[in-house]
Length: 175
Ligand SMILES: [Zn+2]
Image (cartoon, rainbow, N blue to C red; front, side, top):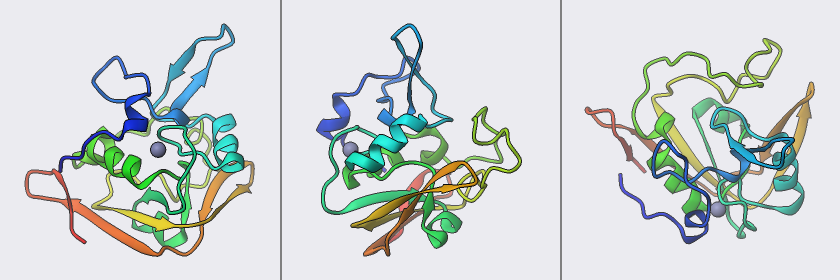
């Protein structure tokens, strides 16, 4: 699967380990004023800002009318997501380049995320190595606080695009 980088994402700083833009929601501010990228943990302040100002979690710019969430089947069934909503183009690009998604993962070790250290944390978006991913498009969402954890709850999806892996373990769009 090959998708061109959206212009908005091309303005993001690139990660040092590869030509991959650092998602806005994964950038953390350090006390000394610099920023640090952590792909396994979202920045709670930016999560709240994304919800309040309607910003895309990937590029940090204002969302369009239709907004995209990516998740495994469980997450999409519950319409709950740990990562903020995105532009559809940004979400499609994330499916293409995110190393946890674009290639099939065999159960990976638990990432060092603040979310996952706590056994009480809601686990519905963190199932390791899903067999398929779904990109849902909707026009509204809410940010919920579930036992101290912030979770995006999407409105009914207008359409769900399904992705799975081919024999070589590469992601492909099914519908
Ligand atoms: Zn975007």
